[in-house]
Image 1 (tube, rainbow, N blue to C red):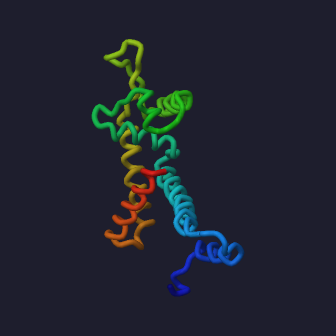
Image 2 (image 1 turned 90 degrees about the vertical axis):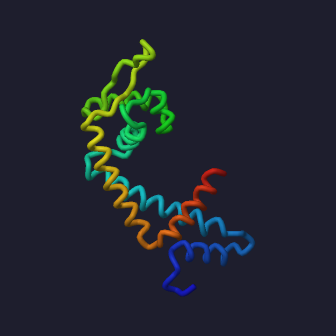
Image 3 (image 1 turned 135 degrees about the horizontal axis):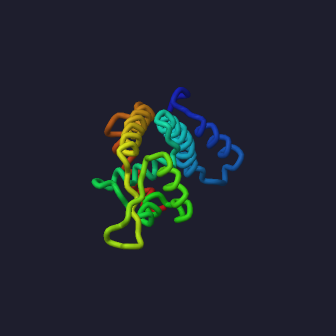
Length: 164
């Protein structure tokens, strides 16, 4: 590997190998890069969402509703599962999104005491536009990979994620 192909992680790993030759630093070769890429992705996501006046958590809730398909509604409990937050946090999030007109609460016809959270037309427009922007940002981040390499990386990360 030429010097022009090295990155910051190679320098960090080389320094640790010099200072602690007794350690196997191979995990750093992968996970330090994943951490750095996650930071870049977080910045790209925030920029994509901000361009459409959304916070990342707002996109998470709206996209869970959008992915559910027509009529784009889920119970608060299902939203908790989809977004991995507490029920109290979800109540606050739904309140805030409803206040912005992006979701509405409706009575659950199958449970007199229950409610369903429904994506409004404004919410659908916002999440669709933010998703377009997000995918553009993500394509840019992956632009140095050819499609086969991106598929291989996705498969490797899937394997890793299933076992973590």
